[in-house]
Amino acid sequence: MTTINWLEETNKLKDELIATTQDFLRIKSVLDPATAGEGAPFGKGIREALDFALDVCKQAGMTTKDVRGYAAHAEFGQGEELVGILSHVDVVPEGDGWSTPPYAAEIVEGKLVARGAIDDKGPTMAAIFAAKVVLGLGLPLSKRVRFIFGTDEESNWQCVKTYFETEEMPTMGFTPDADFPLIYAEKGLTDLTLSQSYEAFQKLGASAVEQADAKLVSFQSGLRMNMVPDKGTAKLAPQGLDSQAIVERYEKHLEQTGLKGQAEAQDGLVVLHMEGVSVHGMDPKKGVNAGTELLHFLHTLTLDARAAVYVDAADRYLHKQHDGQAIGIAHDDEEMGALTLNTGVLEYEAEGDALFRLNIRYPHSISFEQWSTTLADRFAAAAFELQVVEHLTPHRVDPNHPLVTTLQNVYTEQTGEEAGIIAIGGATYGRSLDVGVAFGPLFPGRPDSAHQRDEYILVDDLVKATAIYAQAIYELAK
Image (cartoon, rainbow, N blue to C red):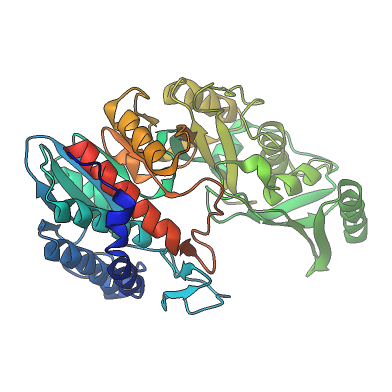
């Protein structure tokens, strides 16, 4: 058989690829509960985007199936084995400050700019057009190829959970929703809440503090467990120290540490504000946690008994503890990297609940039960109860599996570059498959604009990724 020039074949469809991708991106497919209904559980915009993708697949000659609007698939080929390509049609809200309208899908200096351009509607269309290349060449296949389209990847993944309740699990597959060359392993992901009720604190029998500097009335920092909080606020009722003394001590602390914040006297209270640097919770050491930094200052004061327990637990176990060392759960792994701990939300009400919400990501070489038991024991001593909000186990495909080696070979052939494999702390749709990896579309060295204003994919990269996906589909299914 004559060697196929995949890029050349893809370029024959380039104009159609770009135009269709632009039309796809012009659909505002953001979660919209106000327009949700039967067949459109996440709103009309997402339903419209799902129908658009399915229509492109139908026109290419694929058979389709809709799973109650939660997800859908399009399939071609024949055989017992099934190659899955899992992507999503929903996008995050556009936000403000765009240079061009976020759903205009304009091409600016070689960039296709739109919400969803790189995450994940651009790559979704690249994969569909890759299949059109394979189908157009009339190549014989011994396996079925199935595109699975999710609809709430940006929120709760209810789409794939619902889909796989009734539909076939692919033999193997990939998601075009991450980085090239290839992501083969993803850490376990957990969202946890450590909560202490007022009644639980009282049962501790902690001694009253006779000469407290202040009483902590309330504390709040952070909105999401998987983000480092960039703001923190504490409200204190002065006791042994007056308002001015507390303000001066805080301002001196800011000066000495180089941190940013402010203090003010307000309605008989002292309100302290701390500013941090927010980053994604998968690598919390790159940020500055406003919540734990503010509690670190409060630890220098003599506070009321309950606040002292809360602040001491935070300072001992969470301040600058990005790996869980102080708790006793630090664990490094040569393959997947270290366990990471992010304290994403901190809340305290003097007569209400006190809590820490944590996001912990861990490699496959330590079990969830090992580290979570230790964590629970440490905080139980301060009357905190552990609740598991969400838990995704680690995901890993053997580096020698034909899925991995085939995709590596395809990438190397297409780019001339060595196709190393990557382990990450994040989560991709790859982990929704029993044997699944993430494969592109972001090429090495390219900035990642996903979820940012002026999100884009380079037109040349869109075409290049399509060619790579075309060869990948053929090699996996031939």
